[in-house]
Amino acid sequence: RRYLREPRYDAMETCLDRTGPAGRAMMCTSASVQVCLDAGHEEPGPLGLGRRWWLAHQVGPVLVAAFANSPLAGSEPTGWLSTRQLRWTEIGRDRAGGPSLDTDPRTAWARHVLDAPVMCIRRDGGPWDVPEGLTFREWVRSGVPRQPTREDLDYHVSTLFPPVRPRGHLELRMIDAQPGEDGWIVPLAVTTALFDDPEAAETAYRVVKPLAERTLSTPAPHNPLWIDAARDGLADPELHEAAIACFSAALEALPRLGATPEVTAAVETYLHRYVIRGRCPADDLLDRTHGSLGKESRT
Image 1 (cartoon, rainbow, N blue to C red):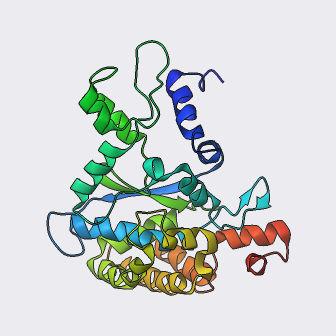
Image 2: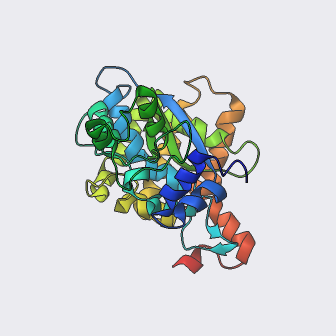
């Protein structure tokens, strides 16, 4: 309780509460596997920054669907396989949305950061409150209540929670926490293979490119594709097909990347246990919780 009464956490609660209870639910009752990848090179092609930035946002829904594992809230089904992802959308686009993909990554991210509301203004004493809706761009221009510093900018960036956050590298934040102590291995292996192996990256690019039409040019995760992935998982036919292709490409790439036989076997097991069958760990949880109320109960 003393921890939560610190000025920065009071300000965070005030800010997140403006969009309803989703912010506190996200902070206190959700968990994820965050995969960090190299941002890429200054070159075109599968290992270039531009392609990796685009791919992270387009393969994201496939990862959401394949690894969905949060179908419950208060021990009851929510109707979403990834309730965690639902909570992120409910927080709002300014705080938890991504930038537009219609320009280069650096420009898009800079604009997004400047136009995002400031969560709090750090002070040596007193509350860290900030006028509602004040963007960092407006703070820079007004200089009120004081001129922001580089440290303020760094802190501001840390209060933005897009599904793909650039931090010198690319931080992928859309994957639900997985069952078991080693649950992080398969998400890490699959994602790394799809980005770092040129052949697998090309396959993933071709596979998810048609899915981009379902985003309606709306930034993640607030577009129809991301929402369908979080709600329906691999019950969505197009996401199911894309997931099979992506996991298969990753499985073929792992030996080329030097993955151990144990890691390769774990990915192969996941592919056959879940992906090919159109299931995800959330389905297991629903089956255990409500017996016969499995995937059919969501139709």
